[in-house]
Image (cartoon, rainbow, N blue to C red; front, side, top):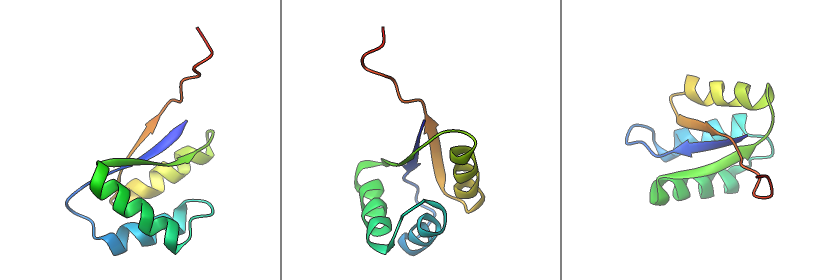
Length: 80
């Protein structure tokens, strides 16, 4: 599964960056800032991939902090 952060007009860049740093594994200040800018420009950005239950916990934390996120299933290109 992949976790995507969606753009909104509610949260500040600073809040988004703090939430990402606190909840996304190995997310430092630079990566959090890059993600915030990508989401702002493109409308969404994949921010993490993983397996349940870990990815569900991260998703819930982002929503609890007021961020708009979506879980998506990664499709294997080789499967029919």
